[in-house]
Image (cartoon, rainbow, N blue to C red; front, side):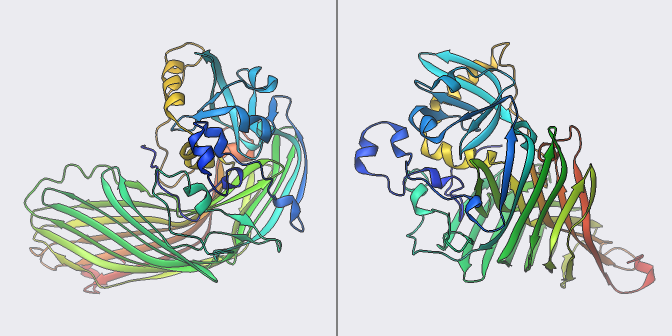
Amino acid sequence: MNRMRLPLLLSCTMAFLLLSSCSKNAEESGNPSATLASKPFRDLRDLPGTVFDVAYTPETVRVDESSWKSALKSVSSDGTVFVFDNPDSKTASLAPGQVLFLENLSVRKVVATGTHDGHFAVKTERAGITDIIQKGQIKWNVPIKFSSLYAAGPAPAPSSQNQVSAMLTRLSPEGVVYASGTEIRLSGKVDDWKYKIAVVPSPDRMDVDFSVAKEIDTLGVSFATKGFLKDFVSSADMHIQDGVTDNFNFSNSGMTGEFNVDYAAVRGGGDTAGMDKPNIKLPTLAKVPFPIGGIPFLVSVNANLILKPGFGGKKETIKGSFKISYNGDNGMQVTNGEASVSGAASGDGSIGDFLSTSIAPHAILLGMAAPKITLSLGTDSTVDMLTSALPSSLADTLSDIFSRTDAGKWAKKKMESTFKTEASASVQVVSILTIATSGAVSLVPCKISHLTIELKAGADAYMLGRKGLDKEIVLSKKEIALRVPDINACGEK
C-alpha cells in the first residue's frame, strides 16, 4: 500500500516531539534533527486515576528522548528502518531480537543492524506490549474532546515541515485530550479509488464527510457519507504478568453518532474488469497520542470501506441510500485469553428507497467500518509523522540493502484485511448493505436489500501478548430488510 504523505487530520500523533515552530535557522542548517524539539510534554501519568507501574523485559533497550533526537537522521517511508549518525552506546549495541524503545516516539523489534557509509541503520518490525513490558499495570480513563484549545491556522502543504506545529495536539490541565479544531480537507487516491474527506470539529463532536468514487470506461461506482461522532471517554486497563497480558480492557464510553450514506453504481456497455480491489482503507480521520511513561500509545478514528458491484448485464443502474446510528459504551475485556463484552452498546438504521434499472439480475455489496476507534502502540505515529519531519530517502536506500542480505531477510508486509489494524485493540461499527434485484424480465420484478449493523470489539495477539491469539466479539447486532414488492414471491426478508 502506498504511503500517503498527507497532513493527517486532527493529528500530529507524535507532534509533541517536534518544534512548535520550525525556525528559519533550523531549516537552513540542513540538519533534520534541528526540527525536533527539546520542550518536554505531559503524559497520561499526570491525569487523575492513571496507573503506570511496570517492569521492562530484559530485551528492551530504552533510548532516552535527548539521545535519539540528536542522532536520528532518517526513517524509511514504511517506518521499518531507522538511520542514526553518531548514536549513543545503547543504540549502537542493538542486536536482532532486542526491542528498540525510542522514548515517546516508537517501540519496534530489531530484525537486523548494519553500518553503511558511516550511517548506523536498524531494520525493525512491529512489537507488542509484552515485548516491552514484563509485568505491571497500565490504566487510564481519558475524555476526548474534538474542540480546539487554540485558533489553529489553515493546514499547510503536505511538503511543509510546519505541518507538525500547525496540527499540535496536547493534553489540557484539566485532563482532557483535545484535538486541533481546524477544518481539514483531504483528497487523493487509494488503489485507484478517488476519495475526498472533510472533517469539522465542534464543541461537542466531530462532523465527518467522506466520499469515494471509481470510473473505468463506462463503469462507475460512488459512495458518499455524512455523519458525526460525539466526544467520548477512552479507557484502558492492562495487567501483564510474566510476559503475558492476563487481563486487558479497552472501551469507549458515550460513543454516539450517525452516518447517512448515498451510493450509486452504473454500467454502460463496457467490461467490469478493474473493480477487483474492493477494499478501501481511507486516510485516518483523527489521531490523538496517548503517551504514558514514554510508551507511545495512539488512539485513532478510522473509516474503511468495501464496495463491490455485481452486474448481470449492460446498461444498468442502481442507486440508493441508508442510514445508521449507534450509541452506548463499546468495549471488550480479555481475561486469561477469554473475551467478554464490556459495557452496553446498540446500533440501528434504515434503508432508503433505491432505484434499479436492469433487464438482467444484478446485485451490490457495500461495507463500511466507521467509526473504528483503534488503540495501537504507536507504529502508525512513526510512519505518519516522523517520516514527514525527517527525510526517508536514506532509510529507503538502506532498506533495499537489508533486503539483499541474509541477516536482514524480510519482505514488506501486504496490506492486511480492510477492517483490521495490526498491534492494536479496537471498537468499531460495521455496516453491511446487500441488494439483489431480479431484473425487468423476471415474472415478478423483485428488489431485496438487507442492512446489518454490528458493533464489534477486538484485540490482536500483539496487544494481548498471547501468540496466535486474536480476539473479536460482537457487542450488538441489528438486521433490517426491505423487500419490494413486499410479497413472499420475492423471497424471504
